[in-house]
Length: 208
Image (tube, rainbow, N blue to C red; front, side, top):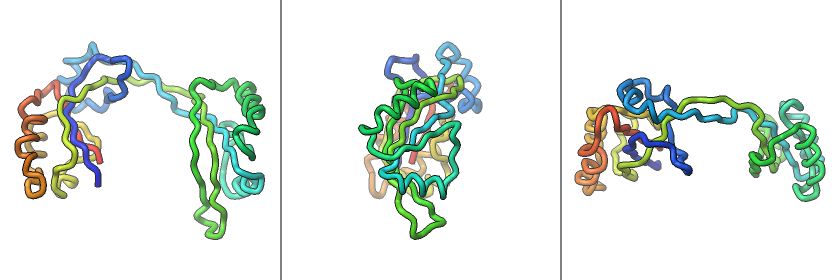
């Protein structure tokens, strides 16, 4: 099981900033929000996509139609190679007025689990954002980090990706250090997470 521990603090949005909390995730610590209200930014996010599904052959496309639910309002189905279908894709983009600058291309596979003998459908999916929402966020920067180094009870006491705002939470986390296999964390963890933790400015969270 992978585990990353983070100690972060709010920062102004930089050009390449990608790490943030939604403001409503920080509601448990009103002082943190109030102290950094000037750093709150509006973030526009895609909430819905139009997707072109490209199947390797018509037989797979037809199987998909017969076994899966899909809506013509937000998807189109094609068969062939993405290169040979360039004009078809262009026409769909033009007809739907899709934003080609924001499109994402992924390769994936689908299987109908209710049909054990059915084929594995390899598809290329081209997705275009078509609906958006705006939410308030605060960006953050790393001030402390540790890879693994905690024992198993830690996973029961802490929630994956949940932000913690108080030094008592960090001290509690320290009680789950895996000192048997990583004795160095007894020195490293306090330096990265405890000594420089400031309530109302610091956030601790773990991801696994």
